[in-house]
Length: 249
Image (tube, rainbow, N blue to C red):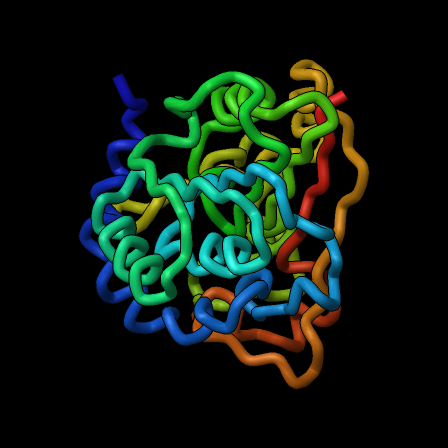
């Protein structure tokens, strides 16, 4: 049975999928761009050459990333637990004429064979919305030896500096670092902000080794459709997003 937070997240994304794609679809359709600020993969270079690789997108939304990687000759599976989002993914894949297999499932219970992927990645996907102690073992299971996990998420710092009363990010910590790994509201999603030490111990326990942690600084010319990230001055002084690069040993 899915955890309660997964059911809540699925309900949210099913209800919000149409509005989400209407607001953010054009930004997401730019191709291989990372995060709220749409920083190009060509600038960050965290994925590398994907041609000929078996790739799993974990929490694909409208599958814009998967379509772009399929056009780079990757063999792509795009997974999401929201049927609403997968409806958009199916249309995007069809319109692009891309070969992307769509799977409706949770990132914490992946219905795919062991050691079947060279890369698992997500951009604010399942690694934000799934309990990491469940998703990381699943990722380690489906990765081949030497395969990589690459994922982007909101930084803990960005979450801790949100001033709920002012509805903006400030220069002071608003809540403790410890004891605040799960964030959520009645109207929104349940997100996980795991302390850095917990991430590293979890990776190591599952045979994964950290190769890089890229803290994204948006360019001064960046713009975004995501209200939680509109404060570009804040994001240029402190990291709001980070990309982990982890390899299965």
